[in-house]
Length: 188
Image 1 (tube, rainbow, N blue to C red):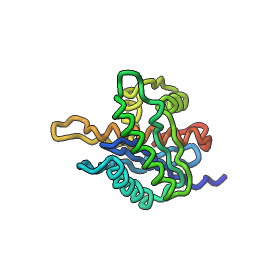
Image 2 (cartoon, one colour):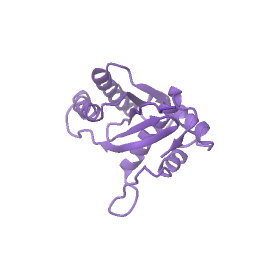
Image 3 (spheres, rainbow, N blue to C red):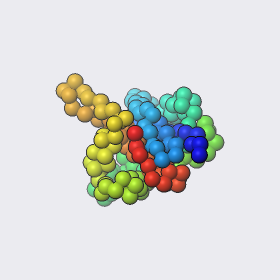
Image 4 (cartoon, helix red, strand yellow):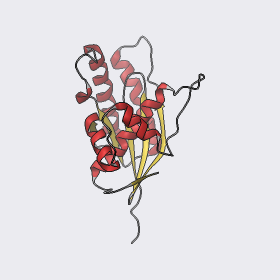
């Protein structure tokens, strides 16, 4: 039997300071991290709406460059726990997430697949056979994938943006698993 064509998923972990992204390929029983990186939204004195609008251009360029079949975004609404986020943080993340979702809709004419953090961890846990219930455990799993590259700063510590990239990879893997196109898989 001949294999299916590879499906490319662009996955995003969005914030106002760093947008982690990954291109995840899925074909038959294989999930592959094709590329990953991050974008830096503009930081200046512009209004929140203007900053989000300028950041949409970055995401649109990413979509045009990779022409993904699907887009998945970490859903921000369910990830706030009491005492961990201020109202201002929630508003800023909401604006950025919705603005980037609109950029995805305008470029690909479909809503992105939005996945809650708890769902991402649950799907990866079930598929991998590992217990992944925290951000740290999820990062440890993603960094164990050979095609995921860890970026270090000048002090040889993991760069902050690497965590955003790992989150984007997790979003993409979870989206592929949730789509049902891959029942059991090997991650390369």
